[in-house]
Image (cartoon, rainbow, N blue to C red; front, side, top):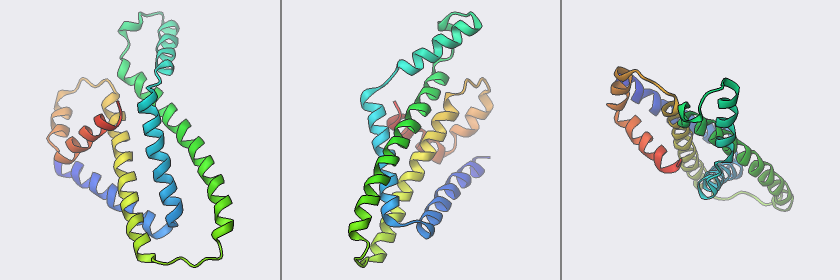
Length: 172
């Protein structure tokens, strides 16, 4: 089970890196990485909790229960995902607009150092795959599980533990 978890995580990282290296241009990969990191920074700096509070109050009023009885991590995860993808979408639109304006000016120039760009695409796609895995682990850990055996099996995986610690550092 532990080996299967580790292999799955590593195959995701390797597959993501290879597919992005072979299929995408270097500028679009850099811009995607910048958008992901920027949206994480914006969410962590501003720590927008109004959406989580709103979702908890709405759920408590809908089911007529006390808001203290609700699992707050799950609703934080939902609010985080909504905020992350909203900010990421806005930043992606802005960077595509800027890229289209700049690509017209630089479209006639020849791209030099193609191998350096491929290495940088590999590095940027590696960082993006780690961020995606951190978000997936954050989602999994936000669900209210009561099964101790599954937690023990997953926690014994070194790769999962590493990504879980990185996830707790990135997503606060």
